[in-house]
Length: 92
Image 1 (cartoon, helix red, strand yellow):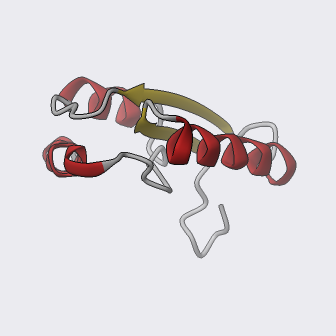
Image 2 (image 1 turned 120 degrees about the vertical axis):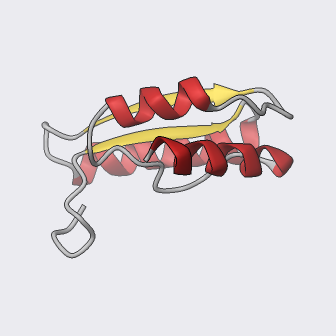
């Protein structure tokens, strides 16, 4: 959120549909953003099932949310990380 950190104003939280760590971590992140962020900073969340591998639509939606909309903390579990980051890279 700082100038040195890129000055992100939008946050897209993406995780596996699972209470720990994704939903709990993102709940803490939402509370942090509510306290620390200006009203112009917003966030969106998306959860995918375990073993999810088709992140093309999710990556496009995240990037369309805003130029600074990047998952700051990955709460994707297990093998789904590989297809997500490959998709993210090809959407750049």
